[in-house]
Image (tube, rainbow, N blue to C red):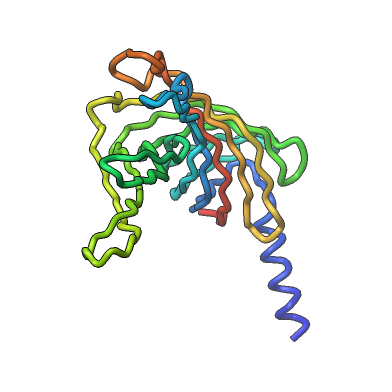
Length: 230
């Protein structure tokens, strides 16, 4: 029993090391908090201001890493990221019916290829920066709402659910280029926590109109991955 435990600890410790000249592969998944810059609030006909909000999404993918030296490596990956931005909820009256609109959001989906350099300040802890190429594969505006109305004609006011999506792919450019910067930490068991901020450099919107001028993606990701040697 003791020999089995010792062997397991030795294997775990070995995985936690970074060896020069070695390749590793790491699948990962996590959460995304994002926004679109230079897309501000907008006003309704009654003067109500709807402010922009951050959007929450997810990321799933993997990357291969090559350890050039004890403290330096380069990693290239492939992932799918959902991001975008949202706006405040609001309500209005139409023909005596109160309509509430919520969860307004531009939902963007990207396939991305990040290439980052890692510098290990101490064992397991790295700072990183690089370049990232993205291609938009999904772009929809969605909103959910309710209307307070007598739908059955029995004099009882009920909430009627409203939900809709609109394809807005023609409003956005497909290619996105960004600079990812961040930090990561790998535990002795080969689990890695990675936090990155993606600085969008390319213009996102195709057209320029009131409130939308040179918009760019602003994305923060937090992932958990499992790294193993090749």
